[in-house]
Image (tube, rainbow, N blue to C red):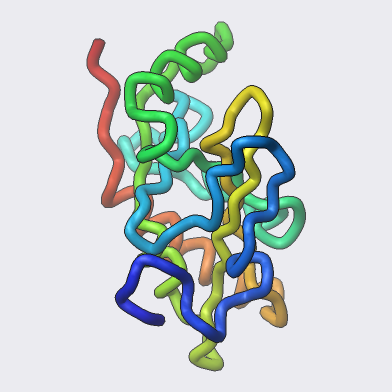
Length: 163
C-alpha cells in the first residue's frame, strides 16, 4: 500500500478509475479520504454499546459492496441530515462509524494481499457514495475474519450523534 493519496499501482482495477457515470464525477477514492457509514440503534449496536457484525455484512462485502459516504465530499452535517431523514420507528440514528480509505485498503488477507477495494459509486442523489468490497479469492471463513477487522477499524472511528 502506498502512502500517497491515490490507490497503489497494484490496486484493483475498480479503484484506479472513476466507476460512476454521473457528471460531475467525484473521481477515484483517495487514500486520504474518510469513509463514513451511518449507525442506527438498536439494529447496528449491541447491548454492550459496540457495533455488531450485522453492521458490516459479509454478503455486502462479497456482493454489491458495503455502502459508505465520502465525508470530504458530502460533509458531516449532510450525512447526519440524510440519516435522520431515513430513521425508522425501530431504528434511531446513533452516529457515524468512520475509517480512512487508506486504512481500509491496508487490511491484508492471509496471503498478504489487499483484502478490500474502495471504489466510487456516486449516485445522482448522493455524489459522495462509495463501496467497500472484498478484493476476491477469500474463503467464507477468511471473509468473516476480514469483516471483523473492518468492523473493528470502523468501530474505532465511531462518533455518537449529538444534536
